[in-house]
Length: 257
Image (cartoon, rainbow, N blue to C red):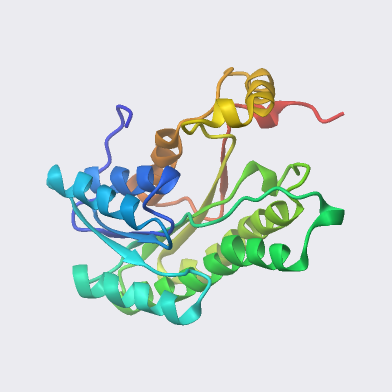
């Protein structure tokens, strides 16, 4: 993490897709900032166990919850397990999603449905269930949705993902209006290309193009997205709701004509 410190002592945070990649960074970031963390995962059981061990070894509080966030019944169980473990829920980070690449004319309808479900339906289902819990507590809370710069600037082969993330951005604004009277702030973070191990080898052309397009000349780090989510969830952002915070190293400053 960077030099900015946030204090989430006494807060309970749910991170969907929270046990690997960006999700693991988010879970660790909130745990290291004092929150009790419920890290959801679907298939990465080994990564989940490793994450919880890493957090608890340094004195943090965390549990892993296996569930499919596109399934309404399983989503309800996530909230129940979080409250059973920690007594409440204050902050939700909707991070779960998938990112396949298929040309539009070759795209199977079931792949379209899967991507919309994993990225947009999941955000709807988990936020609805979490909001009911937070409203019942009567003390307000915060939701941060992980969107993408592709929600406002399309990429070839990602029409389903682009459409889903555009939906997440508009859902964020809509929910900010509806949930604000309950003291729940809802914001989105739209990352650019984030570094992960092996990405340079798997997609050298894309990595090179992104670096050239970025005024800062590099990819982002998971920790930099985590910092943005910590800020938007914190007491430093109590009058911020309904925004889409672009965290992309300046790529979106490029002219498109």
